[in-house]
Amino acid sequence: MKSVVALLFALLLSMPAQASPFVASGQPAENLTASIVTFQPGTLYWQRFGHNALLLREASSGRAISFNYGIFDFGAPGFFLNFARGHMTYRVVPNTLDNDLRHYAAEHRWALEQRLNLDARQVGRLRDFLEWNVQPENADYRYDYFLSNCSTRVRDALDYAIGGQLKPQLEARSTLLSYRKEATRLIAPDALLMVGMDLILGPIADRPIDVWQQGFAPLALMQALRSATVTDAGGRVLPLVSHEARLLPGGHTDPPDRAPDLRLQFLLAGITMAAILLGLAKFRAVGAVRGLLMLITTGIALLCGLGGLILAACWGLSEHWAGWRNENLLLVNPLCLLLVPALAAYPRLRWRPTLRTRRLALAVAVLAILSLLVRDIPGFKQQNLHWAYLLIPIHTAIALLFLRAKKPDDEL
Image (cartoon, rainbow, N blue to C red; front, side, top):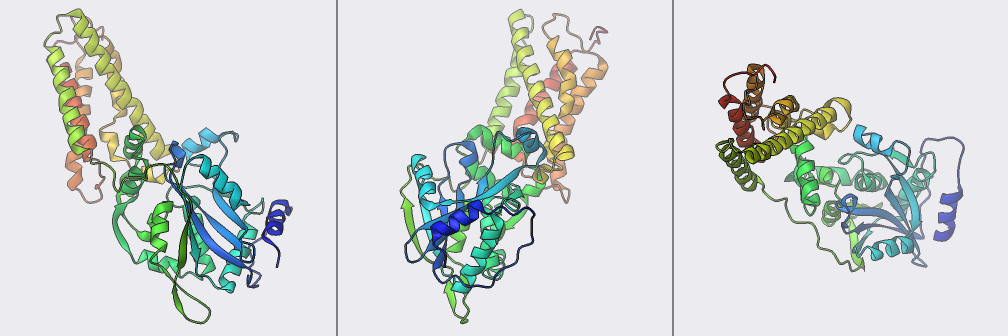
């Protein structure tokens, strides 16, 4: 049996010219044990979901190789364009466990090893798959936040190693969660990112998920494995995790149990902003007030209009399936951009928008209200009530500003 160090060098130096399909050797791994190591979420935005890796450990020496499916390169050609299009490529890379632990210790993130109750035959299947997977021609994979990420790859490799025993167990366990709830919970410490992610997710992200699907989050997979079982070659049913060991203490706060409920905060913010707009409009005889109202309303129109273009592009021009058919387009509406020229002219004392512009402002408000009505239609169950509470009062207030200017001015 190769030592763990020799195995690492073989993995790093072996570079076949052409990709080949995976074929298991069928040889048991008598001197290796398998584990999953889970790492605490970090403080940078791409670390908020946490991380995990598969581990092959040499039983005699304790030396180990980790297999990390979370490697990406910001400097890769077209990285940000590919990110926007949903064409992200990640890679699996082997490394010594000691090197990994030094990295996470420097970031003050805890690490927990779950030793797996796999027999030599099952560990051999896992070893064969990982040796094949880390070859340069096999290492890259198309990344998807929920369906194919660093954690789902670990989950799927383990399920393969134990002959598909894991997936039925986890699929049979339902949750009260959705992809939206899990994603916003994990990113909640970064409030702006949380609301941005929540805004861009469509109704597909609100479908209930089971524990297998929840395994896209490393900490959720770690918890699920604690109650999973595995049947060995002798027919014995054993706990999948034989024991756990804390490898690093960590120093950050773990993610909250749930994402914050934004409905009351957003409702109060929407009513407050609408009251400010209508209150300022009563003093439009004052030039400074007109200027302030222009800045606020044009800012809102630009944010909503540009945000709507992003939502539309996510739906129509990208492969980010979780953002498709986003009903927030009724609230963050690209039509708002057409109101900007008229709003920019608001400081004029005799501000009189055209009839067409006034109708457009009314249409934006009506479409926002429509987002509440469609919630009762089957298939329209997006969890976006908080966004309706925030934006309906604001769009209504802006529409009232236009409707109160009754005489059209051809200059506008």
